[in-house]
Image (tube, rainbow, N blue to C red; front, side, top):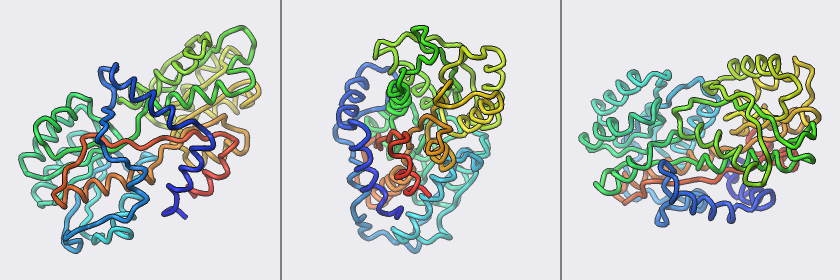
Length: 369
C-alpha cells in the first residue's frame, strides 16, 4: 500500500485542491521573498521521480556506506520520515542495512556536528542530514565538501543564500523538503472553508492564537505567516490574541493553549499550530476547557500524524496538512543515489503538501497507517 502511496496521493491532491494553481503562485512569490525556498525550473520533479524505478547504475549497494543524522529521534514526524527513509534504502534500493548509520542528534547541534565528523572519519559515501540548526549548514557543508562527501539536507531548509552558493561553487549539496508557505496557506484555506470562515462569534473578525514551532526554523516562520496571510488575502479581518513558541512539542502545545483559553476565553475562535504534535496538545486543552471543535472553536495543524487524521474523522480537529514523508524520504534517497552515480543534482527539490479535511481524511488515514 505505502509503495503505491504517491499515485493515490496525487489523485487525492487533484480532488481536494487546485495544486497546479497553487504551485504557480508559490513560484511567483519565490522571486519576492528574501529567504524563500528556491524554485528552480531545472530542479527534479520528485512527485514523478518517486513513482519510477531508480537506476542504480554500477553502485556497489553491498558496500556503500550512508550516514544519516536526524535532529531528534523524539520528533513524531521525523520518526515516520527516518523509518521510511531506511525502509526505502534497504527494501526498494537494496542497500545493506548494516552500512546505513542512523544517529540521533538529540536536538543538540554540537552533538550532531560530532556525529558528522565521525561519518567523515568512517568514510561514508554520502550523508543525509536533518540539521538541528539550519543556520549551521554553511559550516557543515564546508566540512563535508572538504572531505569530498556529498550531502542531502532534509526537512530543515538552509537559507537561499546557502543553496545559491552550492550551485555557484559546484558544491555537492542539495535540499529535499516541502515549501512551508504552501502548508501555511492550506491551513488558512481550511479555516476559510468553514461555514463562517472562522468568524464564529460573528463580530466581523477572526480572533486566533498561534502555537509556533521553533521561530528560528524557516518552516515555522512560513507556516505562521502564510496561514494568516491566506485569511487576509481573502479579505478577512484578523486579530492575533497570542503567538507563542511551542518547540514542536505536544506538552508545550497543551500548556500554551490551556493558558490562552484561561486568559482569552470565548474570544479564541481559531487555534493555528505549526505541527500536529502541538495541535494534539492543543486539543487536550480545548476539550478540558469544555470547548467543542468545529462548533465554538477551530483547530488546524500540519503533518497528518495518524492521531491527528483520526481526530479529523472524529470531528475533533478541523484539518491538517499532509507533510508527505513518503515522497520526501524517497526523493532524498534518490538524490543520494544521483550523487553516488556522479550525476548533477539541483540545489533544491520540493515535494507538494496535501490539504487534509473531513472530506479526504479517511483516504489519507488508510494510506498512512
